Image 1 (cartoon, rainbow, N blue to C red):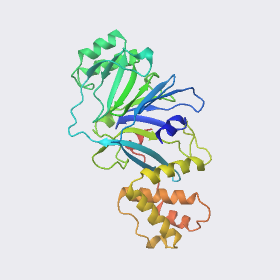
Image 2: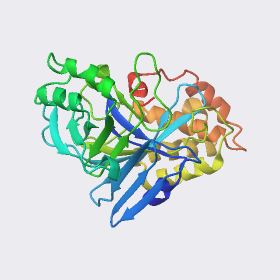
Image 3: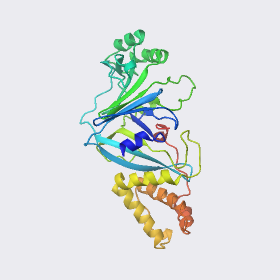
Image 4: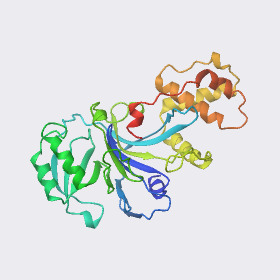
Length: 325
């Protein structure tokens, strides 16, 4: 599965925590160098790269999320490890010279900014001497504390590469850091959002990651509803089938149970008002997604009555969604 998804440019990847994330994506026709070395896979483009090491300890969780447009849904696959027993307060740390993905970047200096959580480090890599001096001066300090605040202008000036690390890999971003009102560039980019970091979470609350686990790599399968730029397109059955296969293999048992209960009730002609609608927020979301999926199928005449009763109100946009926008 991993090799197939890495080779397919329709899908994106990320490493990060809530408020500090690095994303790797490429255009459908963008050149990429893909290599294998034992249990390690590497992909590099002119704008960024990713290295992933296969690990039998990884627990994979596929899940979908309810979109706010009243019609669609999102989909993700989380590669998880148990959360560390202790999560120390983040501080800037000099990590020495980096074993980068590209030969031209090796030997540059890597600094952990101390904004990651648990297994994840959010780093910058640079050969810029003034930035190196500035980061060494605040080593051991909080990036958003009194000492660290002076470093941010230097980071924006020097435009270092960003490197997100976890126990099974890394994402490298070579594009410029947006400044002012500049929007994030297409393709590989990072988000560093202090307001969300203050929540001190390893992942968004609407991601149904089982307690005790932390995502250390995320796969973002191309949506059957949208192209790589997020524009609406005609529904792509092939992409939907691809994710349905992942859900069948890696979906949460409770999600699959909700799906089955809704599908069976509709098939058996149960009136929507007589159905035991799920009591949990996650269960209700999964039931609504199931109704939206069934609405895409022919021959389900009862579906509109179910949607009128249970899927009328739009899902509010939350900071959790914005963290991965």
